[in-house]
Image (cartoon, rainbow, N blue to C red):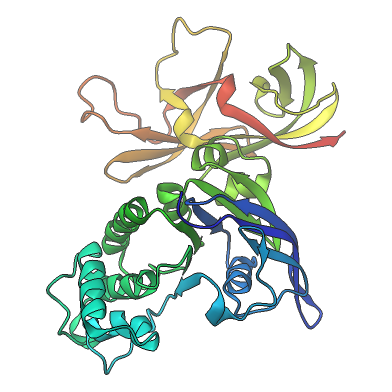
Length: 370
């Protein structure tokens, strides 16, 4: 396996009286595509800069394959960084931009030529070597930056919001290209982003950060499907929250919760609970089914509720329904459009509807006491 094992141990970073990182610890496997995801100011870029050697931690250790990197200057670490702004030399051609790290090593011209061409082909720019950066599109500039970062053959590539300057379609295209490049070269990628879709699309694992701390680590599937806190559930996609009290522990995996204006609902039980506990439950809008007809033949594993459509938002591939239950409770329901209302009745504003979901899709993300 190429790449390095990256170990972060209890890393702290303070700027004056502000603690940007609060005892962060994590381990990134060799060859892993690992994302640091969180809102602006959460500490993810600070952590990346500490790994790169551009910042020193106030406390803690940064290890690559067990070797402490903190005393080693940035230019001697087996790490390269790709920045938001590409940082290309405007007066140098694409070829010379990519060749720059090799020129510093004073490698023979023939070696430089062969390696530069190899990496330009890797990023699908084999015929652009004579152009200047000003003659390239945003996506092409990003490819040049990637080639220049990889030509030094680092064991870890750090990517600091590298696609933020691109438009949405190009960003999606470059994500696929990044994933393909990672698969080809196999080194460790550490990717910083505030965009949930980017992180979920390409990562082997994701560390969600907030206010200088790691709040959850897992695969994209685990992070999205099984959030462990209200922050993660809210930050990763859209969700519904309702607050109620535990009335019955049905078995090892199911719990009954009583919610104001709704009544009893069964949820997945993955936390220690007692009757009387106050809980916050979350359910993703796309997990909920909706119809003007009462569903038939559902087992006891499904929750079925009734309400009225307060708002409908049509967005092409899906419709978003806001279903009101009482004065204070509103459910968001996402309905994917498979056919153009060919096999069912359209749901309109003010319609009475039924919504239902499997208990296994609702998670308790916060527990308190009543």
